[in-house]
Length: 385
Image 1 (tube, one colour):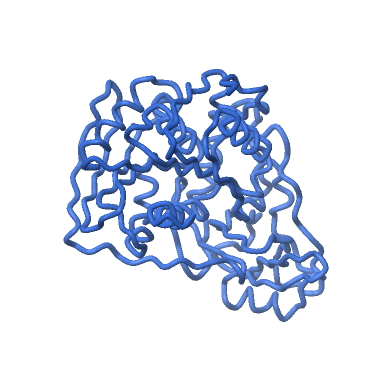
Image 2: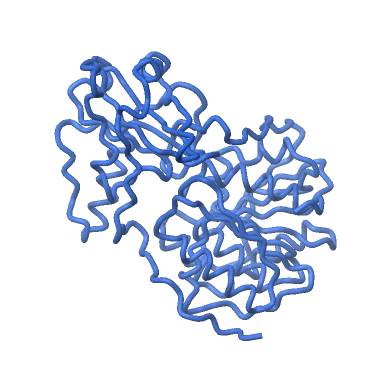
């Protein structure tokens, strides 16, 4: 097999948006005024099916007199549908024929899920020069801290709390609070870095599951979704990566010692069975890298929205075992990464690795990752992939 990957799609630096997100905004007349009024009254986006497009129209609407938003420019942050690369597409404007309402209507793919909020700005949205990554990050972190949530389910993601919004045909997997008898301990990895892990020991019989960006997935209650499944991991290892992007990238992409440290802790917990390792974004790339480096410890990588181009210059030497499986899933709305998903998956296949690839209707979004990760773990552990 050819072990050298062909040319990768261009790598996107964290925080950059070289190409604007597609504009999914559609005309106000796509939904009737009664649905708009319901969105205002209930405080939740409402949906109407568009048969010709085989998609949903989603209306986000608020009263112009809402004291939290009055006099503000309101940007709707909607997982995979809007983005800071095309701000005008997400700004709420007076709804046609309803002077007291601000709204935006979007065409949404079937089964869409997203972490959503409304971000108010006092006046026009003056975004810093895109070449100043630090100023841009600080601007958006400050903006997100002012977010107004919709009514209904909430979730915590990498940027704090948001509302969980789903299209009417999106799946709703069960989640349950873990029992108090689960044991938790915090350990340091045998590795010259800042990585630490929260190890949760359960009464389950399924393979050990290691999760990169573990603190974020714990905040998002991945353990609650795993607790509802069968089989249940006998142990879950949620790995944190220090306090900076540089430390995370070092662990997941750059440092050759990190996969070995992860393998050692998983091996101690696995009692001779092979474990699984999971992650999203760079964590997904790290899961693939770790599995390929230690096929004697890990049988399966669960990789969500992995920017494979990050490995283009240091593609791992493939030592996959006969039972090695890479589950690779990306969002159909991740407009900058979709070509890279296919490139990475095909590169792995060309090296003789078994790849199960799929796409979810969403963006680069914890609302999609945590549910699919729990579902895929159960399928892989029970042999029903």
